[in-house]
Length: 387
Image (tube, rainbow, N blue to C red; front, side, top):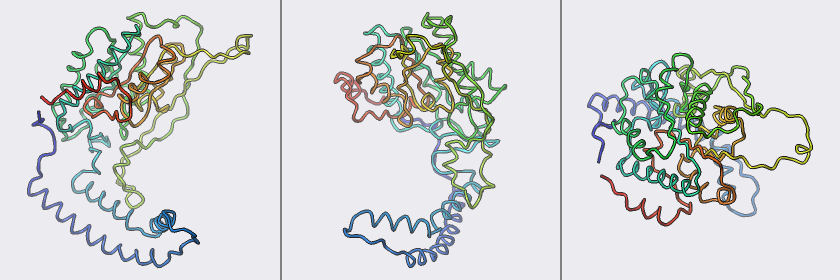
């Protein structure tokens, strides 16, 4: 089923006319800058080579990029025109109000999104069944969409209606056997105190990560899954000096070095670091501690990137080390599939598994190529058709 309310309708005649003007100006600027390419070619001196291969081509490309201002200048210029005239950046970012940026993944949907969502829910069911067979509790942590927590800053952008249907489908699919941690209510209640998401990044701040970790511990406590809270403190978290941070969404606004004044203000925040508490030397310590952590955490960059310290807070609140199987840049489903079909899981069963899943990832197609899923799973995924 196609989402009729999805953004991206054809632009009106006024917008088309504006783009035409921008295009004409852009062509004139590009034409003028192209004259500099003559110098870039004329000044090239090839290194001595004995065999013609790709190295010579790469050498020329590096020289051309260094001497030829067209690429950076034209990208800066085009982005500036889009920003000033249409309040747009490159595809991938949506400009909200008050310097807030959002990923377009939180607003648009892919064709056949219902099929994609159902396939992802099937992967969750397979994970549940696999861990249940080994009697391992699963804790699923859904990272809310930034636009759901800070809708007041999205401006004129409207989310596709699919984004409002995801959580109901997740709750229905997961049922009661799995501990489901949702954060919308606790985040909304706390967002006035400190930022929980960065203005210029897709991720949560350390404050948001701490709030999420505490919600996870509360849910685990309710199920009797926290076993070492009363032991001597094993981890401690300390604040670092405040620093500035340019978020990942700024990469969709290539305005520097020509138009730095048009860039949104970088975020500032207080980094935190969680470290193990040093213990007095003992006979056991001298022999070394080769114990394997009993809690496995799987997830995305919300967990894997130490900048947010989600994993650090979990260790502190659980009072134990974690076995980390989170990965950046591939979504939540490949890391879990790799873990459950890999040697680490086969060789050691954890006491509990914590799985961090961004809500927006549930509407994205899982990249499972190269992962040896059971045939029953791949067959089931293939049979799921769009509604």
